[in-house]
Length: 117
Image 1 (spheres, rainbow, N blue to C red):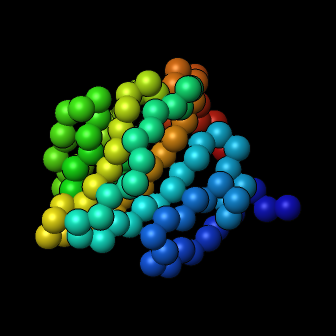
Image 2: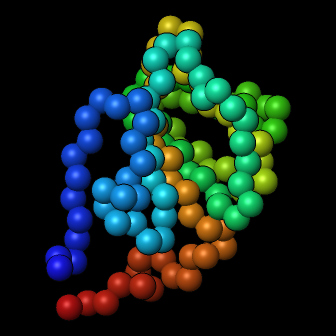
């Protein structure tokens, strides 16, 4: 078995990468919303913080009732208990990646975790 996994994803509205890549420490999804569309539910988490990276377009997140504007290049971290919902702008679709990890689980950053081979 190889020490890596690779996938290529197309233009689906939402793709979860845990199965395609055999993820064991993070949940990663790629999300695309057309102009004016929004995720149809508000949610929070028990344990996982989420990191959102805006790849294309514009929109906003409503976090605990506060509207946070988002554009390509923005990165946003949301605590587990925060209530969140995402929407595309009225005149622009939005594409974003969502990385979900257990809050407080990072033991070391790259420089401390790397092994020189």
